[in-house]
Amino acid sequence: MMRGLSICLFVGVTTAAQAQIFPPEDEANATLVRSRASQAVIWGMPAVNTDLMLQQMLDKTPGRMNQLIYWGRPLDSRNQTLTPNPDTLYVMAFFDTRQVGPVVLEVPRADAGGSLTGNTMTMWQTALEDVGVLGVDRGKGGRFVILPPGHAGKVPVGFTPLKADTHTTYALLRVNMTSHAEADVQKAVAYARRIRVYPLAQASKPPATVISDVKDIEFDSTIRYDLSFFRSLHRVVQAEPWIERDRAMIDVLRTVGIEKGKPFSPNDAVQKALLAGAADAKAALVHRYDQGFAPFFSASSHWTNPTHQEAIEGQGSNYGEQDKYPVDARGLLYTYGYISIKRPGTAQFYLISIRDKEGQPFHGSRQYRLRVPAGAPVEQYWSVTAYDRETHALIKGMSRASRSSQIADMPRNADGSVDVYFGPTAPAGKERSWVPTDPTRGFELMFRVYGPKKEFFEKRWVLPDVEAAP
Picture 1 (cartoon, one colour):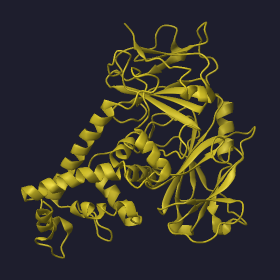
Picture 2 (picture 1 turned 60 degrees about the vertical axis):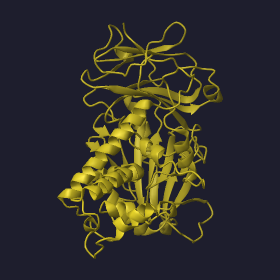
Picture 3 (picture 1 turned 90 degrees about the vertical axis):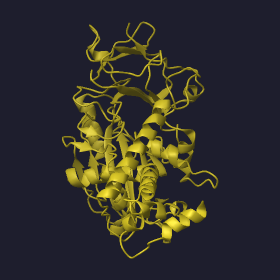
Picture 4 (picture 1 turned 180 degrees about the horizontal axis):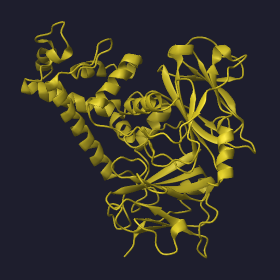
């Protein structure tokens, strides 16, 4: 079999474009391009996910590399990122060490003025460090230096080095809010504006940080399984060094027309094979998501872990384990999320539900109730958010997307529990406890706990399944 593959690889090799090495007009080669396109989509998902957010920032907002953008109010559906949290205030930064060398992210101390929970990641969304009140600095603040690949210079005392294997990195920072009241939102905004970004070379006298409010801008980084996916992946390959663990993908990508130092210009036949491969990848990923993840509270619970355990472990270790490289689990994760956590379960934890108590998929035309028991073991807050089942983004056109323990006037039952309702209309008298859904679309739920306590992981507190109204 290997001998046959070698013949296929080298017959007709010329100085022409890679598409001519694998002429897709030939049925066998078209099948190979389609297969490798599907493989490229799954493997490249986390980097394309990052690039989509980066390109949205560059194309739609005033934000630029080595600056900050923030959403100056809780997110609404104008923000079409993947499963974002509408009960916090988002700050995002993309760093490029090619421009200025090592870059400093300065996180302010948590105090009466505010606090944050944040994560820093590479282009491939592997964790560099968790920062903020439940991060490595434990709320004391800190100056984190993002170092370029292969950087050998020393970092000054008082700075925490973060060694990246890509030139492009980013930080996702969530500023905590005590409520959605305007005064609390503005307090969070003021704290967000204390975050600083500057070149390490200018640390003795840092320039002012450029920070832009993008709350009114349409921002869509949902995954697209079309030719734009491959253009995005090509952009990443051109900009970033090959990581040793991924060198086996060099020829795979050449097959689909992506090669370092060369343009991406597939002809019509190649484009057809690429689109077919992308559709194959989407079908496989959607099927795996539908199959669900490990149940969290019990074997019958429909609240599941947010991803496969091997992907969680890989995120935090830069996929450093010699005998494991969970590309499939990683690819699945970044179809519906965009974060990497160094120490999962310390600052925040997530649960996903795509089915009700009877095992039926959620649909926006039906009414549902979730009863959140009293005494949730969290240091900060819990929230539950509804997302579009197909895009994994906030449901478009809804007046709100979530309810949380931050909402002081949410009605409580006699035993202290809280009922949250989901459906196209609010049950009579339940408007403050209601999350609207689109009656024409399916939806999914994410339950967040910020600052989970050990009782949560010991399952001494159990979140019941969502029940459909009779």
